[in-house]
Image 1 (cartoon, rainbow, N blue to C red):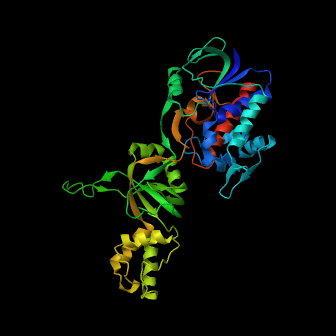
Image 2 (image 1 turned 60 degrees about the vertical axis):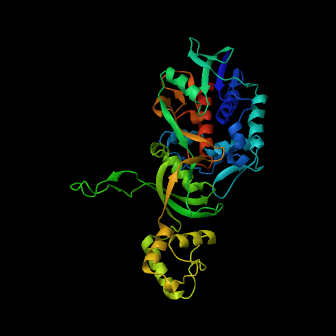
Image 3 (image 1 turned 90 degrees about the vertical axis):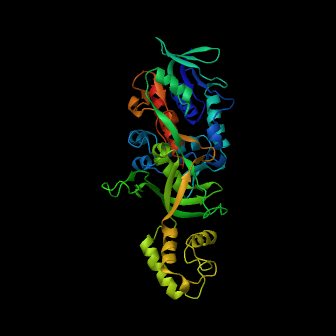
Length: 421
C-alpha cells in the first residue's frame, strides 16, 4: 500500500516525487519504471548535454512555443517557470548556464549531472524506485487505485501518470473514459532528394521556409477539360537556421514547421512541397532588381565565381547551376530568363518533401489526454479524483529548445503541490 504511485521514471516522474516528498516527508511514494534504466530521455536530450529548460522568463512569451497547450499552460507557468526550475537544480548543486539562443544546460555539459541530482534526491528522500515494472492494468478502488504489474497488485491513494507517449497507458485511460487525441510525430526533419542540396551536407544558413497547400482548384469551372492547378498558398511559415543534411533539410526552421504542422503534415502523409527563401531580406522582385544592377557592374566576371550574396559558396554554385547558368558565363552575357531563374532559386526555391526522419533521439509526439479533461490548477483528471498527469502523456508539445522539459517540470510541480496538500 502506497500513498502515491507515480508511473513513469522520467523527468516529470522524478521531479514530482521529489517535490511531494519534500513537502510531505511522511508519505510513502513509489516510482514505477517499465525499463531497466530511469531518465533515459534526459540522458540523450540536447546531444547528451540535457537542454533543461529555456531562458524565456515571461509566461506569455514562454507559451508561444507550444503548438498544443499554449492557452492551458499560461496559468501554470505563472506558478512554476524556468527560473524556478533553474533554482531547483542550482540549490541542489547543479550550476546551469543560459546559452546565446536561450537554451539552458548544466555547466558540466553533461546530462548525467541532472540524472544524478534527481536520483540522488529520490534516494535521500526515501522514494522507492521499481525498475522493470511495466504497468499492465489500472483500476479504481474504494481507497483510490490498484496498479497491476506483471505479477503484483499495488494499492495507492493517489496515482500520477508521467508515462510520455505510451500507447498502452493511453489505452487504459480510454478504458477509464478519457479521450485520447490520436498521437502523431512532432519534431522531425524533412526527407528531400534534390540535386541542389546533394553532397553539400553540413551547410547551415538563415532562411525562411513555407509549406505549400496541397488543395487543388479549377481556374475555369466552365471548361472542365482544363487541368486542375495546385494552389500555391503557404499554409505554414517559419524562419531560422536551415541545415542541409544527408537526407534533406533540418535545423530550427524545419523543426518549428514539423511541430506547428504536426497534424496537417501527417494528413499530407509527409508528401508536400516547400518554398525556401535563402536570402530573407529580399523578395524575388527585389532580388531580380539587385541582380540586374550586378549585370552592369560585374559584367566581365563569371557568375559562378562571384558570390554576390552571403550564402555559403557551395550552395551559391548549386543555385547558379539550377538557374541554367554555365560555369564560365559572365554577368554581362546572361539572359533575362536566367536572371529571373536565379532570383527565384535564391528567394523562392521549391523542394519536394517525401517523408520524414526522427530528430536525433528527441522523439516527441503531438497527441495524448484531451486537455479539456484536465484541471490545470492541479493537473488532476476532471473525470477521476486522485488521478494526476504531467509531461508528454497529455496533448501538449513544444518546439525544440528545452520547452518540452519545461512542460514536464511545471506539470509535475503543480501536481505535486496538489497531492502533498
